[in-house]
Structures are given as C-alpha cells and as structure tokens.
Amino acid sequence: MKKFIIKSIVIGCLFALPILSEQLYAQPVPPPSGGGNGGHGLNGDQQGAPLDGGISLLLALGVAYGGKKINSMRKDQKKDI
Image 1 (spheres, rainbow, N blue to C red):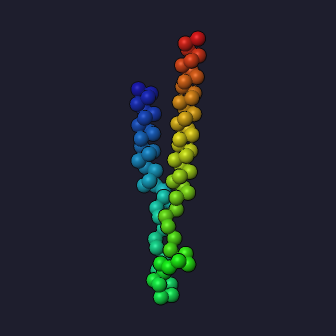
Image 2: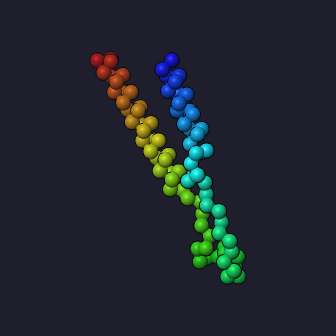
Image 3: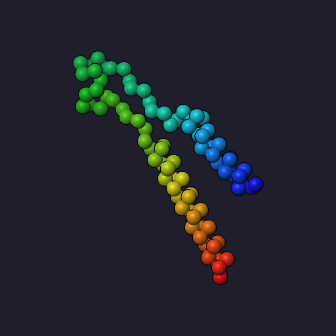
C-alpha cells in the first residue's frame, strides 16, 4: 500500500509540473523591428526556445535515478552476504 501511495504522488507531481510552471514555455517571437528584414536576419533579432531549464531538469532526474539504482544494488548485495 505504501508503494502505491508513493507512486501515485510521483505520477501526480509529474503531471502537475508542466501545468504549474510557466517557465517551461518558450518565449513568444518579438515583433519585427522594421529594419527591412522582418526581424529574422543574421543580426540575432530572433530568439529561440530556452533549453537550459529542461536539460538541467532531465540531468538532475537522471542523477537521482542513478543514485537510487546504485543504492538499491548495494542493499541487495548486503542482504546476500
């Protein structure tokens, strides 16, 4: 029963995270500056989607998952001895 509750909380958090955080959405494209090229030239007027937040979140989750796996493997080895 305890595992079911923990899994339910984790799944609920994973579904609620994108809804509650507005930081994950990309910024809208700024209006054209009127420079003749429509704001899409080579001078860097247009900005892309922010990737830093998502990549660092995935990296942190990967480290946490790897740590959990290593910890469970150590516990299994201690039980066998």
